[in-house]
Length: 326
Image (cartoon, rainbow, N blue to C red):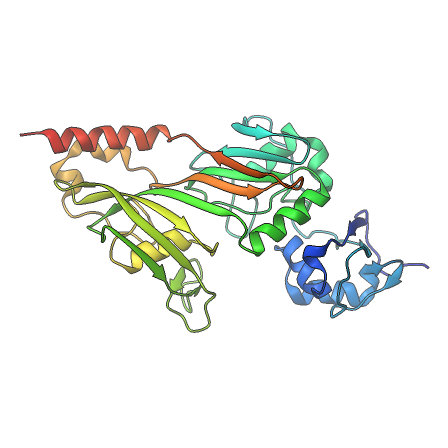
């Protein structure tokens, strides 16, 4: 059968596993190609861009375990991602299926609207060129992301089947995400923030909690240490969902935003004036993805930890010093 979809990008083949059985084709593709709109993907399918077992499919086609999906990705309107060998990967773990990295603060994960400069995606492509065929061209092997100025653990799939498996695990909340954050103010000793999060209705670069049309979002937190003289606290977070800016939005919603968060935070009153040694340390939002637990495609449970970043350790040391001053 001749495919009517004209495209210079090579087709991608997926064998549907049990995790995606019963899911609509357009939903499946939207998860694999998050940079493309659902309507654009549906149009691509309707014009012959997807075959199931060699036959043209519809956007609403329900997938079944064992089916072979051949997808002809539309030619990307974005510039081609170029490998960047100048950024070295900080590898926590690697095998034939996945790669666990420690992402530094200040590095964007992948190209996108409003994002420019170096990206982790370009560094991954330089270090592992074979990942060009795993996922969208600008997101090789990436199944989740961290904000530019958030550091910590991030996993990368190294083949199509691993990407489908890990994408499913994140979507079905079979992963465990734990963060560390320095926050301003005095949060309760522990608590659970259960409030939906959605795109801010007027400020499109922000997310907002409490929106009726928002998606469910749950964050469990516990204070590890308080710094009374600076009105700061070190907090442990467990994210039960994975919404954009979730930890930052939820912490701000209870009046204790992440320290130095430029979007949801506020400069702590008189903090750097009273403690000038802190000023050069506050260069990014103090949020770190400390621990990530994911199921492995082979069935084992993998636990990855990213060490404390240098700026976290420097800030902690300075805050302890301030607390001990007489």
